[in-house]
Image 1 (spheres, rainbow, N blue to C red):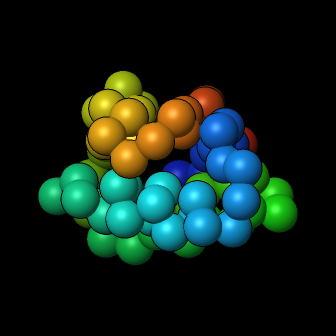
Image 2 (spheres, rainbow, N blue to C red):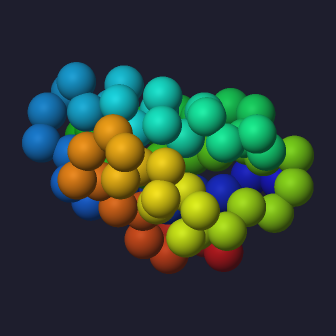
Length: 72
């Protein structure tokens, strides 16, 4: 399953690594690609993942927030 999200709170290129590392901690996330320029996150998961759960992981790494999928 592939999902795309807008990500808020990234202020520099280093933030992409923090966001990627945070999201990869979720057991259902297989692959994460983060773009600072587009402020987007593309994820491949093995099952449905709740947006709230992803944002809880991000909160431990910084002031980042995923918003509704770009293409649900």
